[in-house]
Length: 322
Ligand code: PBG
Image (cartoon, rainbow, N blue to C red; front, side, top):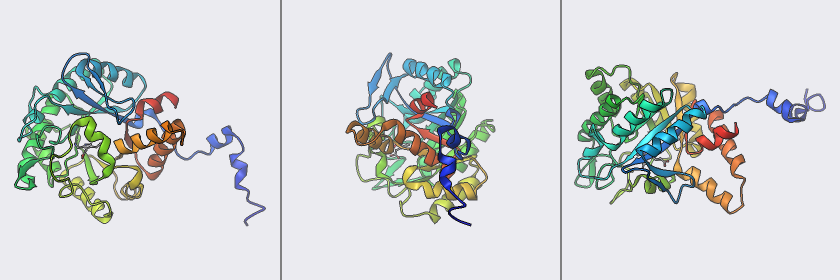
């Protein structure tokens, strides 16, 4: 029953035919745009390693969010660049901190946009680690208190979803308990459940000024070769009360997006991280690759693998051409 009865090329003959039989679609509503918010007024500080991305002050972030909303993009995820960092990440859970003020300003202007916050300590600690440093290690349980406090201040400021990205054990349960205790039973938790100690975060650390001053994150983020362990991380986060699960990075971990999709009934997100974005830009700048096509192809592959939601720096560019 094979050739010449079957000719797969019949359904590839034209644009309209290909469109008719297309299995995977991209919608702006599935995208989440990461944004970096800093102090000041009318500040737009381009990030050299991430073309088109910038640290922005709250006024500029609000303008950006209006545009994001008008493009039909699903949401934004906020990262804070505080002017003050210390050993205890205190700006991270300051109710008047940079992210908390940004949330209030955005929610006042953009009623429909889903505002997600990244919950982590690394942008707020002087040493750049994701929690409390004791000796040469990060103390898990003390870090949970700061994370839960931060998540609560985000919810109080009006965040629609909180997304812990630190990879401490038990953070989802700690955040859930803290939110529920304060009456925020309806704030969902989008857990960066399978987050790997990846070299693809390089450009982000310039963007968020969060490079660890000593050592690396391998004692808390996952070891890249481990897939079974990723499933266990996700299972535990679901047990602790996560509403949505994330795999990060995306392109080098498509197998895990697929495995998560088949195994868990909740929305699965994937983060197309800074290194993935910058790498494609760099190749395009050299004239080695077509940027628009690689953008759409890479985003499509993440959806095809099974992601419902994609966190991507391409959100606006992709939404414009869809
Ligand atoms: C940590 C955090 C990181 C990213 C998102 N949240 C960096 C890290 O773990 O070092 C990376 C995002 C990217 O590379 O685009 N708060």
